[in-house]
Image (cartoon, rainbow, N blue to C red; front, side, top):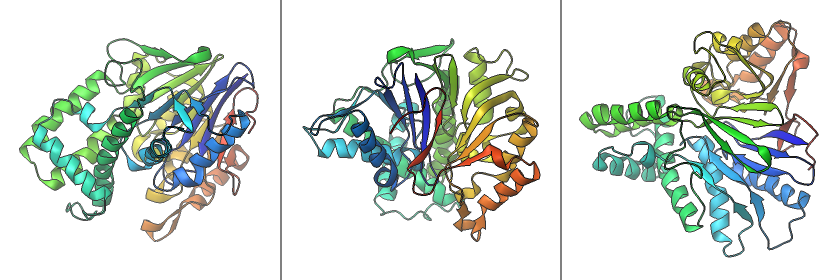
Length: 394
């Protein structure tokens, strides 16, 4: 039996492949996010090529992928998926991949009732940033302006992705009438061979609040800077699709860039926690939110949400993973047996005077004497993999 999570080398972003099957000869795959610019070429396309060989897919035929999921609109998650769909589009009619469904909540869907003139303004800004026609410093937001510009570019990328998916006749958000989200009761989507996806976030309540905030706040201040700041701070991370994947009695919590309090609330609504403020739950795998950032995380969260395997996808940029986050894992799990998996051992933040984030992480591991509980992607490997049953063969 196979139930594995691969974290491909995705630079500062996320690019995951979830694989499962009742036997080694009947393995299925879900691609979750595609990393930022360059990851499609360097990691994801190469891994999918390996899987074609593993499954013995003849030249000219398509590798089946059960689902592609984009957790949220952010370049370091959506860019590689756009590369995947562009490759499929360019190869028609002999597309190399057959995708069962694309799960993706685009900006236009999230802000479904937003003022049309502002949605158009945002889309135009996003297209301009993506094409390099609008400078990332054009929003007057200081250091944060660059990230806001990246989010704006992702709005344009999202529209492009949706257009390509529709052109390829890919089913969008199968299992839902509109957005992938929870409502007033647990939502479980079954996939083939008994894999279950429990939807944790976003909730109808959260998305409604975002929509209301957009109309009240941004509509009153329709400047480029205001639009950019709102999109950056609110829509991207707060609308992250978070799921619990369950197969063969094992579970994985896959978190996108969601905030800890939203995850706790969602786990409570889904029945994994009996109390959003005191309940505890254990998973076999926890993909750490937002690349191990301490801005999405607290010590209390890590005391209440525990795992045998913690997976952190980051390369040091934006100081991710924060040493605080690794410290909190160590404090929360003192004396326990677990592993922390890092997609990179060398982690440098160039914006912070080449801050050695990897050394700061290793200092924490050393201080708690848990160096042996850290696992790093091997040099030149496309990624690292957590196998909960039999090892997935290349």
